[in-house]
Amino acid sequence: MSSNTPSSTSSTAGAPDAPTRRTRLPRVPFWAQILLGLVLGVLLGWVARSGDVAWLGTALDKVGGTFVQLLKLAVGPLVFFAITVSITNLRNVSNAARLATRTLLWFMATSLIAVAIGLGIGLLTDPGAGTGLTPKDGGRPEQAGSWLDFLTGIVPTDVITPFTELNVLQIVFMAAVAGIAALRLGEKAAPLLSFAEAALALLQKALWWVIRLAPLGTLGLIGRAINEYGWDLLGQYATFTVDVYVGSLLVMFGVYPLLLATAARVNPLQFFRGAWPAIQLAFVSRSSVGTMPLTQKVTERLGVPKEYASFAVPFGATTKMDGCAAVYPALAAIFVAEIFGVSLGIGDYLLIAFVSVIGSAATAGLTGATVMTTLTLSTLGLPLEGVGLLLAIDPILDMIRTATNVAGQAVVPVLVSAREKILDLDAFHSAKSFDIDELDGPGGAAGDTVEDTGRRRSEPAPATA
Figure 1 (cartoon, rainbow, N blue to C red):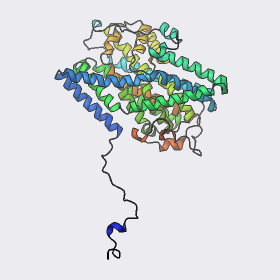
Figure 2: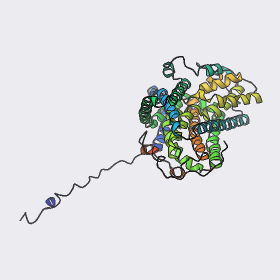
Figure 3: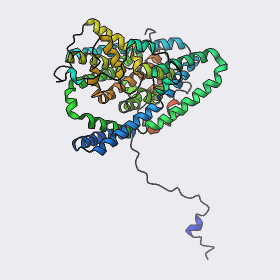
Figure 4: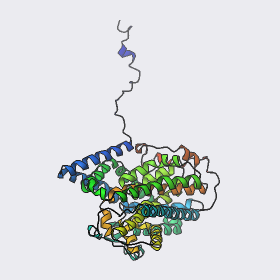
């Protein structure tokens, strides 16, 4: 009887097993993780400071410091291989010299606009007045930048020291020489270029893992800043802090959208939808170079040809600093001059603009802008002790400065591509805000959208810069 009445078990014996449903916790978006890190960092920093909890303060310092150290660990070789590969990639781009020249001109033009905004805000608000700070509160920095150091320091004395001392300007110089030499050698340099491309992909993948730790790094960095500086100190720098944030935000959400709408003829809101992940990471990591892999990915997703993006983004990450090298030095110079009772004239303001455009490579995409500040102050003849005053709240200011830097590093390639009619408009219009977990690091989905064929290119645009 059992043979005539198959059981339920036997009736399904030949069928494939039904998929097992697993209950998964909802994935927390990366931006939410960052926001949570910010909130927890402020809370834990306040607890560590108000409750005098030494171990908590130490823990926050270690977490934040380790995150920054991990970012810096890859900076030297990452910059070298990125610049070398980006220069050699230009051989695959038509009108490479024209693109490079236009990129540099737009870098300079936007820096001039940014420094003008910084000077204007500083002259209107007098950030050094009413702070209660005196020259005695400052202190000379351990390292100071000067034009002689800047010019003579470009060429390294050996090939090892720039990497051990993390002199990014010298690393850029060596990488540029290597890239140009490889172009001249042609096929003979193919094995070296293959190695450089593989090394760059490896470094970017490793840095991608570090980027995923940004929420923890945010918690530590913000907590450490609150624990060390507290709210009372911020009160003394209230005007200066507001000036830096307002100036940076005006550049990011005023100047850049205007240029995108008028010069590039694209939708600024669409740009920010696509570029926001990189801007967000820059805000918390405080490192343009550390954000560079993500910046390049969002730039490619916005329709910039991959070969051009691989040149423009690394180039911008080491030289394009509208926040650190334009808005901030202008305000810092006015702030220090007012604290030390020094009057600045029109000639001094022109010098500030000159330093901002020419000396921005001194910031080198690293956390902080101390070298650029000392370069500006020394050029104006202002006391370098003023740097000690500014270092007190530098981490809080560096967040918005770096976000502005990275936004500019993505804006210019989009702008140049649009004006040169090589921007993939379909990719640009379809780019959207995404979670970092949607990307699979170097070579993942972020780079795929611009390699499709048959896309509609940008409409003709005037050829002037």
